[in-house]
Image (tube, rainbow, N blue to C red; front, side, top):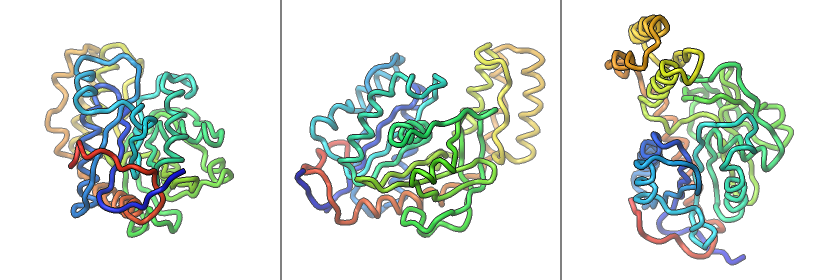
Length: 319
């Protein structure tokens, strides 16, 4: 395999696999975080999309305007680092997801062709099953909120982070820490309440697995909570969603508790218009600085001289 040394701009690939409503927001979240993490670096972001799946007209417009097909990677386009987002799981077995065949091909490609890959939430679950046969297990209730995490290892990816920090989690499944440790994964951070937060493994490239969502903006969990309330009101789910843990101030939580009483007493989608409009004011972006440090460490690693594939990525879609 021909090689080159990393010099000049850093090219980051983002494989945006999110549901329709979150496509643009997810790109913005990662783009803003990368810029804050390396304000003086010359960065290029290339956004890719997986094929297939039924998409709305708005999502199709985003895909055609902003994204290259993931096939461009097989065809020779190169990136220094790759971020693969999660998505909402639709099946109990992850291998039954429509995206499974293309994701497994992407994992193999990333391991051989990117210096480092970040795998977010659902993508992390799929990757460890594919690479090491470690299966996720369903949680009794969705894990949603801001959780205190503690640093669990000395590693370049968590250098400069404090002994503990808060970060968002939003998922219906979990990975067993003992199985990850047996398979050689280094646990970077964990939460007493949320389980494993981040873990890493050196393969042909450095792979960082994140069960949480440090890229989330301040209102992301609130928007998810509101979406899940709408699903309850519309009869798409039987249970009313739990309020995200450790996320809102006391007054806002009380407002939302009163809204829950009205919603469970009178189940009507039209009621969502009465969702407290001021709820986001009760949110502190407490995880922003740790997230910036994490991504600064990752970009610093990508900027070091190391092996890459031959040709740099095209210069379009520059910052």
